[in-house]
Image (cartoon, rainbow, N blue to C red; front, top):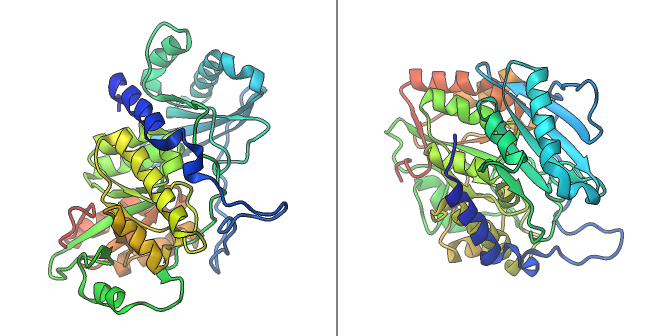
Length: 399
């Protein structure tokens, strides 16, 4: 969806003013050489299987900077994601390169509705969770001429982001598999148990809706936005007329601001999932606050709206985590329906878990970058509708 240029430029300007340029606000924990910062590596849930690799496109003749081109479909449209790596000396000449890649990818597969591009520094590239790209762009086929004009310096194009070089320091993200809300000490407080049992928001905690007699449940997605999956997921939700809450990783929002604009423009709700998707219990209270604050600032600058909801990665938290969220005016949200789509148990298993756990006042947890979510979502939405359920945002959940 095309967004006006001025709001996006204003948002990016605000990001620089509100703290992204202040790298000390999110500096990684200092550790001895050879050690990893707290929370950098987490165990994988038992039974997790590798996700199948998406199909790839090969450009002939090859473009040396293109590392990979993957594509996926949702049954209605297909989208590709091209990853490029460049040397520092090439940064000043990226426009003609990305224009050529976009044109070639769209020409190589006529079924594609869109190609998204992520350009990384070759020496620092460490996949999607590593240092941020130096440039990103989203190019729907119908906007290729606009993108070409921008690349040639003769037009504006709002679906592109250039790293200003003042982004917050990198912290290695967790490889967390959500298995259920888990206090770090392994015990729930009386308040947490009461919030879980009675439902609704209680002192900044939300486990489920309050009214079990209403056929309403919240649909939520963690880890947004991802440049291959986001357009496909948004297309499915638009076709189904369903609004959801997306728990956004702040660094992903900063690098792909056009997808945050798409989410907001289509009426979805945007929540806080930390800036680096890092497990919070090992961090100090000040570091937890930094993760939440930086994400809030990023999202508010892009949408102009306050952030209301927060979900800790992995569902792991401490009393200090909850206190930090409360101090920022955030409601900490958990879930009732987790099919473990990120563990790749198989489409049939994910679909069965989703439908069997659907209940009034429930909160459904999915991941926007899980292939099996994409496979089963349309069927799940259809089953929920047939059962008389309304799936909505957390804001729309009776609390």
